[in-house]
Image (cartoon, rainbow, N blue to C red; front, side, top):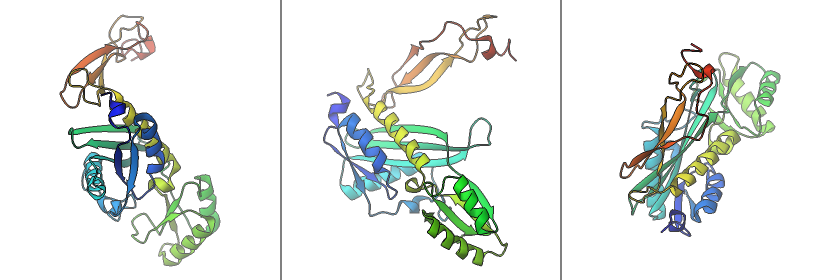
Length: 283
């Protein structure tokens, strides 16, 4: 059976408290014909919170797996989904906020796990102000109220956080409360990173859903399981000027997560690399 047809009209549980089903469900419904069912009844923030009250003690993938398994147990489904995100500095300059999203699909009867990913610039800002005029100006500059905010007295380490602020009236009340509690005469603000309060992150989750759907539809030619995907590239495209191999890729390496079958596929591109990409011609 073709993989998209295998999941047609099947129920897939998604444990989330943050509205992620709004962008995940339509993508998988269109691609696979399945019904993504939101599951509640478990506070996912107990597995780790962006506002740092609860540290995440396992990797993003392991946390995703735990969420999916809990959701499948609560909903009594054989198919499950879970999403997990992380925020760091970008991998090139180390200066820009960066978001990595993973979306795990579990097919328990077949023992399949498939992971969709997406990454890119994040809306993750931190700023402080001593007065309402300063904080409201910075909030507007950073996309409030579409992107929600969290406030704390004094600094990022104060545990007295007010989260999910989504209106100017609510922001003013939270500011007054935090300023009254502050012993430094400052109010600390940071972006709300939970998906429902961060449209930039929600769009990244949707990209991960598209990646997951594409991987589910890619079937291993050896064992016919889903998730046959590109795992690396082989470099060595020759320089057009000196002929030496460059770091430019010539082939994509495909591999199956189930049986480990792999093959290399030539990339459709120029026969030679521009000398600007050559370590010898452009050291």
